[in-house]
Structures are given as structure tokens and as C-alpha cells.
Length: 253
Image 1 (cartoon, helix red, strand yellow):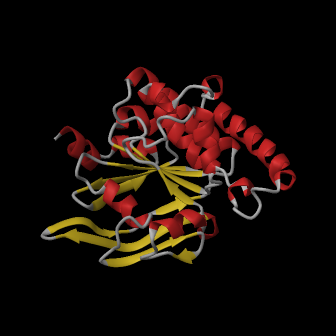
Image 2 (spheres, helix red, strand yellow):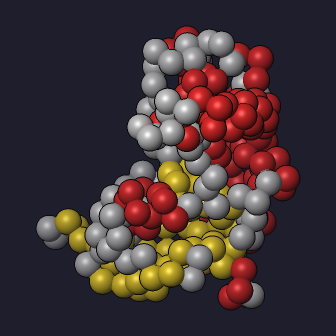
């Protein structure tokens, strides 16, 4: 592994809740411009691990590094500003705003500054550039034709993609997607992951993907970590994962 290409890595990350060891001495490496997937059954510790990495929770022990910086224990808003953004299993857009307005809300704007806001000519061209960028982002996630829809009118798969669009609008270097196909009609799940893969291949963005539907998600990954009961029980390429006896046992019993 080329350490210079690591975007995120952990060393001995551990977190307990009372007597439950939710994350047990976990080491992962996420390389730039890849889709690294965390898979495992419900309760395996996948979401807890991402919550630790994004500052939602603080680890009991271990280290977390992002773009070469030790971010262990940092608050989530500070990690967000560094360029590590996450989505949640249940999308949380501004439901009464349009699709376009939701993306624009994630883009930085001088018009929001109380000092610059009255000076319209200083930020007007920037606003036009923001709208153009927002449409490019929406095209990447297949929502450009729905830009005028209020978010509450979108279907489940479309809401998931709006979350990805909002994360892209922040200029994120790494996006953690928490079960992006959870609750989505299987007929559309592949479309969502296809958009994610296209973004990875054409933009300077890395993805950390949490899933338990390996039958659908595994072909879209570059590298996979399999978790069970808080520990990484196997890691490797998708083809190695689907052939591993221990992974098969975890999923099929």
C-alpha cells in the first residue's frame, strides 16, 4: 500500500458502550479516489466506526488521521471544515426548499456575509458561478431535471442522491455514505451506486461506503472491510471477500 495515497486511516480504534465493545482495535486505510466499503450484518459496528471518524463520537483509545492530520477527538464541525463529510441513513435535506436551493445552501456564498451582502456587485458574479456549479453537481447525481422540485416531493432514491449532491457542494475530499441504498427499491439501488462510482472516477472525491446489502453493493467497491461484532474479520478486494469462508459464515450463518 502506498501510504502517500491514504486519505483516512485509523490505528487501534476502540469504543465501548458500557459492557458492549462496539469497535474493537480497528485499523482501516482509505486510499484517495477509491470506494472503500465497510460491510457486515446489523450491529457489526460499521456506523459506530464512522461516527468515531467523523467526530460524532470520541474513541476510548486509538488514533484517526485524515489527510495526514491527527483528528482524534476533533468535533464534527471541525472535521467537516477539513473536507470530511458524511451522510446519514435517513436523508436530512431542507424539505421545503427546492433541489437546487438545497445544493446552493451547501455552497459558500459572500452574499451570506453581513458585511458583503449589501454590496451586491461584489458577489453577484460569484452567485452566478455557484448556480452553474450546483447544476453541474445535480447532473452528476441525475437530479438536474428535478432542480425545481421541493425536496419533500422526491422519492427515496432521489433523496439519497440529493444528500450526495449536498456533500459534493461542500467541496468534500472524502464522503462517508451511511447505507445509501438502505430502504431503496432494489431496482434503483444499482443506479445510486453507479452515480457514486462515476463521481469517484471523474471528480477528485473519495468515498467510504457503509452497507450490509453486499449482493448489490459489492461490485461497486474497490476495497472492502468486513466487520462483525466490532472487529474487522477480513479485508480485501470484492472478489476475495465474496469467496472468504468466514464472510460467508457471517452472512449466511
